[in-house]
Image 1 (cartoon, rainbow, N blue to C red):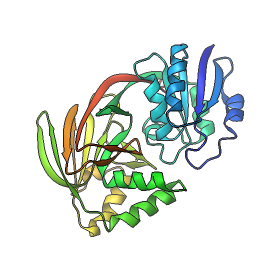
Image 2 (cartoon, rainbow, N blue to C red):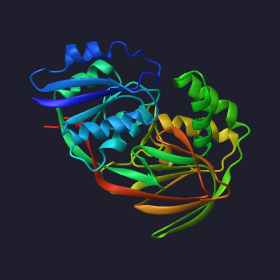
Image 3 (cartoon, helix red, strand yellow):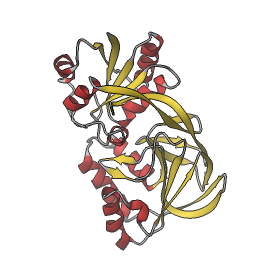
Image 4 (cartoon, rainbow, N blue to C red):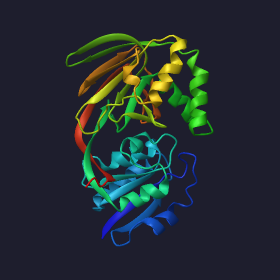
Length: 293
């Protein structure tokens, strides 16, 4: 029997957490796993808990929450033999969606009974890790507004996006890396290890968490009349074919922007300097996914 821990974020997303323990008791196979359930009490607590469970030799630690919770738990498991599992319960759930993990809690817990461990890449932006995406520009602004709001969910995200869209001015960025030397005026730039922002919106449809590369998705300056088509392309998984979109791949780049300020890391905003050094670390994290064979 394998020891497995569930780390629950009590404030992420929009769904109630009070049924998590019951679902685990009802759906997790007791012949396979001996579960422990803990609830986070403050920012960064999930990382500390995950590190401790890894030191104790746990088979897996399951993040119950959104992409921010997944980021915290994964930070505590990088470089260990303890696997990350995900029971999505946040607003976007981009990393879980990319890994084809159901956003229904009961199905995600049931999947653990027939899961396997794979190794995936993760990203670094200066001294911080990301597992799905990080980015600058408009999506960083939306992350700040979303984080400061009192309510969560898709409706809030759409409202924040629309309110800011008409007033946002694209910024100039210099991107430098192997075979890359570009200065561009961009609406946003996303550095994608995984392909999704969340809500089934693919900013990098061809991104892979196992190819050792990041997809650098650059949305160039565009007229407002082009915004509906760009939004549609996000949800039909073909934004990389849009006229105003360019994607390049690299293992490591340096980005220099006009001013220091916010970036988003797996959907959460952080203040960072003008120069960002971004790279992919190969096979740095073990993850539980649905057994393929």
